[in-house]
Amino acid sequence: MSLINKSIATIMPYLPKWFAKPFAKPYVAGEDIQSVIEIVKKLNNNGFSTTIDILGEHVHSETEANNVLNQYTKLIQSISKNNLDSTISIKLTHLGLSLNEELAKKNILELAHYGNKDNIGITIDMENSIYTSITLDLFKEALAIHDGFGAVIQAYLYRSIEDLKKLDSPKLNLRICKGIYKESPDLALNDRLKINENYILLVETILKGKGYACIATHDLELINQIEKFIEKNEISPHRFEFQVLFGVPMGNKLDELKEKGYKVRIYVPFGEAWFEYSIRRLKENPKIISYIIGNIFKK
Ligand SMILES: Cc1cc2nc3c(=O)[nH]c(=O)nc-3n(C[C@H](O)[C@H](O)[C@H](O)COP(=O)(O)OP(=O)(O)OC[C@H]3O[C@@H](n4cnc5c(N)ncnc54)[C@H](O)[C@@H]3O)c2cc1C
Image (cartoon, rainbow, N blue to C red; front, side, top):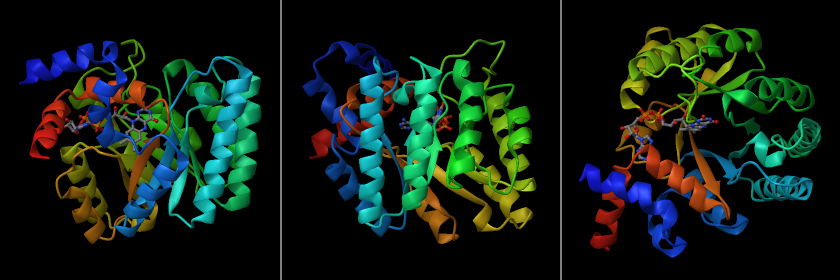
């Protein structure tokens, strides 16, 4: 089965979008704001916080980047108007970073003003390592405008522990993820166990320091280890939260975490760029194809 899954994931980018849609559906909350708002309402009613991401990255023109800024400002207004428990997540290349640093800076700082006005948290996702330094610099500038700004560090990067130490402060809201991009072995760990060790080190460093840790992983072993650390050290639930991607099966783990009084936030992507995003998720884990095929036939 795993060979079939891998083959489907490999050929998927070359197939028509209608064929890919059932595979994408579990991971993406529709194509427009109304669809995502309905899904977030349901998640909130079930006790989950969310962070909403408009799918897309690497825009091709200033107009496109400004259009993305507009979509995000509308999203902030909708979250606020509907009184949702949600932040937003954004990629700087979606706001123009790969075209022009000044453009991305103008857009993210403008967004910081909107977020501050409606008191909606904003997390800047972390992209390839060529953008790490500029992303952290712009994060610091945005944080000076809006306290609700968060950033991300990737456990596979050697530099992350030093970045974290420089950022630590009571205002720090930092998501820790393993990292999803292809990186050179000079910059990034490649061994799963070593990445997990570094992940634990990063989370523990935040929890021993002053910041707030967003523990973003589906790795049950990692989650269990971190829970043990939290319990042993009696870390207040106000110092951390768990985060997962919308649609990734987690068994009953998320309910278990909520029952312990821990916050669980679901990263909910939506938008017209669902195809590219879903392909990336499927390539990460071709096993998901068996779940989806199973669900289609059950229906
Ligand atoms: C909330 C959130 C935000 C993120 N933000 C960023 C970011 O800003 N920058 C960045 O580089 N990366 C980001 N990531 C992605 C992250 O870096 C990893 O690539 C991804 O989460 C897979 O790693 P894992 O920690 O779940 O562990 P893994 O060891 O990859 O997976 C653990 C288990 O979860 C299962 N699993 C993992 N992914 C899926 C999936 N898509 N479908 C089904 N099962 C799956 C695996 O099969 C495995 O059993 C984010 C992840 C999350 C959860």
